[in-house]
Length: 470
Ligand code: NAD
Image (cartoon, rainbow, N blue to C red):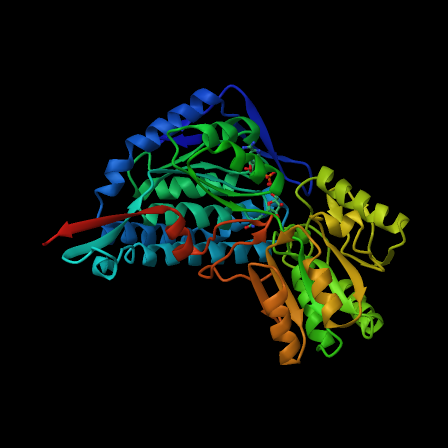
């Protein structure tokens, strides 16, 4: 598939394959963009700013609604392509499509609500006699750089609010899975003037890096790993940056919890998208009083998952993004076993597939739980009491989301107050998000928030206008 720059299809001499992780088939190829192509995209995006900013909010909103309708019509085709390039079960791809439609709709609504406020300057020393108000002004050009695991919805979480507040966009989709994003940008381009949305494909280390350092890009909205995020924040200079990074989310099960509900939380949180979710359940912190019963029940439910062809509607566990990623998960689990952890079920790899794995007796210093393990693994850490559980939950450099299972409201509020994370859910796993909520982590999990209204805040600047009426 070609890139889209200034409304034109741009190919290239160097190409990269997009491979189906399930069977190794090459689905398509995309160009490897170099500096010259990035320059062209930056120039087209800058050139299109006026045409977008001259549109009324009413028109921008209606056009976003129209794109939303088109995406709805093509829902099944998009989901099929998503499963092919990511290896996720078709049922999960359809959910990603539904969320993408919802995200667009939220942005179309938000486009009509972008305004400032009056400011009482007379509340300050010497401020009497002014009439002052603020305006929310677009930043200019937003570069959206996104990861492979939820390529479509995560990219729409950047493009849609950016356009809603009248920024033009350059999208750098994930190298492994760029196709659904590129197809979506084609839909957008049918509605908006050429250059409002542009795509550049290839390797982040080259074209992504160039977007990050260019003085003609005004904002970097990045979702991906901590390593890349840190690099971006060091290179971005004075431009605004939003970083949605990795997670190592705890699921805390206290002694009084509804164990069946907590087990459901792990199934929905640790194995979704083969465990490749930023807010996936990555550490299960269980009170030792109930740990045996919890482990037995979790194994029974885990073994019901069906690993298979992502396009088969009965499949509930697809592949990882590629075999290399599956080998990495396999090695991390094997190392934990060597250090004393015990596999209760799973633990085997077949190509890019890794079995849903429950692993007990995990200690907090094992690599498996110190770093973000991006695979279908449920590591159980045993603790005693709510105090130890909170300490374990906070024993990480990450702080994206957290889930706590308890029926005692004092414990619930103690966890909610003391766990250091952007979101704490009570009696729900961390792997839950509505697309309007403020989403974004503490500590190394990131800087800034997404969730349309919050993303708009990050993609505008506030200008104050004061009239001296004295
Ligand atoms: P990644 O950091 O390897 O890549 C993300 C994007 O950055 C890709 O498009 C890549 O090409 C680009 N990139 C790579 N090097 C770059 C550079 N030097 N400059 C600019 N861009 C560059 O991440 P990934 O492996 O695709 O995704 C997995 C990670 O993303 C996990 O850590 C996961 O937790 C995180 N993630 C976070 C969220 C969130 O909202 N917090 C959501 C999904 C995934």
